[in-house]
Image (cartoon, rainbow, N blue to C red; front, side):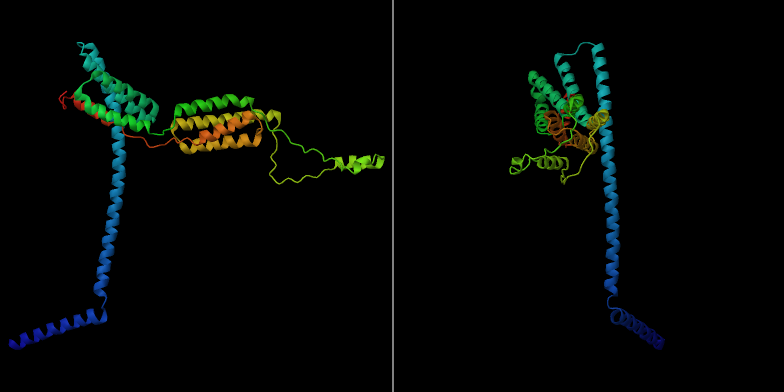
Length: 320
């Protein structure tokens, strides 16, 4: 038995020595390779996890936006229904009426800013709400008015495009199209004969001068564009009108790319086919260039804090 145990121990030591020889002498980098492979696997897993997290975040953001829009619409419908029910019941106090009117103004302001990006109307509604708060003189509404003051300041500092103003200016330009002047052909005046030749009044000299006036050579370094015939001016006006109407529709949809492309095309046609020396044409071209600078997708502030504070007060959470 001792001999057997000795043989087994000797075999185990030989196997260990062989493994040591294989790992250390024949493959000294095996441990490092396994560590690198494990690190690469973990890196791939981390990248996959980050990608899934990013996709999940985008989906959550889209869902939250949809829920907010749906909640605003539902709240507006519920508020209108509530106002109708209150009107049929016993007359509420003047303060309750003022608070209901205040909530409606704030709700409509949020709707106009979020759904229609109408900064001017939202600002007017918030200012009207602030006038109501000033008339109430209720310290319980201090938080509402404080939030409202910050929202009014944020809207005043927002450089959002006046879509209604853009639409009306484009409409005014359409009415001026019929009065614009087409480009006319330009002819170079013939050069006068030299002073020395003018002293020769002979028939040969007169004939030579006349011949020189008939044959004139001009160098044109710019691209020559064909002039429009009078009957083609109508098609130019229709195309310009179509581009301006397309820009109006893009402004209403807040589509910056289509808005800019339409105005660029209209300005190009004005420069190519209309008389650039005419003051009316110059005014239209300058107006198109100015409208082209409008930013239809400016970032808008959040104005929902005052509405949330008011609802908290109406629920009795702020010792109203």
